[in-house]
Length: 215
Image 1 (cartoon, rainbow, N blue to C red):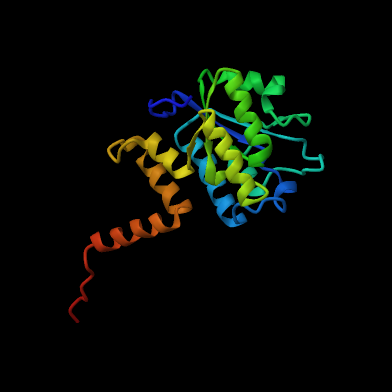
Image 2: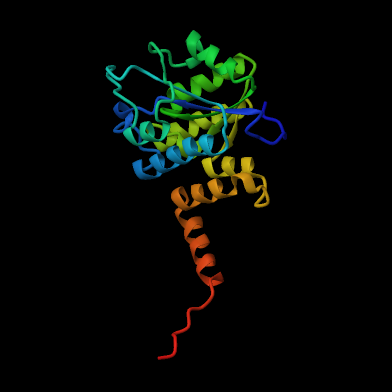
């Protein structure tokens, strides 16, 4: 059951599940553009706030294919735990050990597909004594209904929803947290188009008006 305790970079880990090319043509709950934007925003949030990150998927040679190239570029050489087909990633010993090694109990999960590996991994997290959250905009399902019903099932057993920007904001806490405010602002500028445009507009209004110089 999710608590009222704030998620912080010290008490939580982010878990990315099966962001692979073979599933791109399967989901319809989100547009590819929105889904990819949120997924990259979430991965960059882990990096910006130095949050423990666990990434899992199949082998690149599996039918599901390799990871999204855009996400792979963001993650660089971060290790990817290759599962052998388990829908619940906690059925994989290497994954269980990697999650345990983070030393935290709050797990923020996202990936593909909502009604498949994300749901079952979140349920597995509960069975193993963790407190799971799911990033709904960085997670996608085959249909809008399938996505919604999988999330509803998770919510009914205590899994809490969030979005990538809500999570980043929870980590940032305040504009006065200067050590991460630049990274937080860049996340918004890169992956929150409407809010980012608002920031640019405010910056433009705050800039001194340029006066023409006398000839």
